[in-house]
Amino acid sequence: MECGMSDVIDPKGWLPWEGRTDVSNVYYGEYENTGDGADVSGRVKWTSFHVIQDASEAAKYTVENFIQGDKWIPGTGVYFEPSH
Image (tube, rainbow, N blue to C red; front, side, top):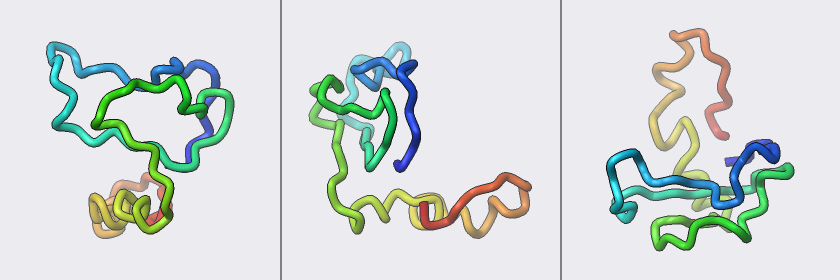
């Protein structure tokens, strides 16, 4: 989400996990990425891949909301923005 993506990103964007062919049990989402690798028109055609259009939907996947990172990441010294 909101990532700068260079052209090193394959247009398909995603690969199945090694040794797995069923991709339906993982939610693959992208939201407001920028750069040469951000064009989603060539992305995989999986039903589990989603281009998130709505900010309120994207908010579900922020560090703060999705993994409650605001509670434990500060102790690691890793920089992050809770609402991004």
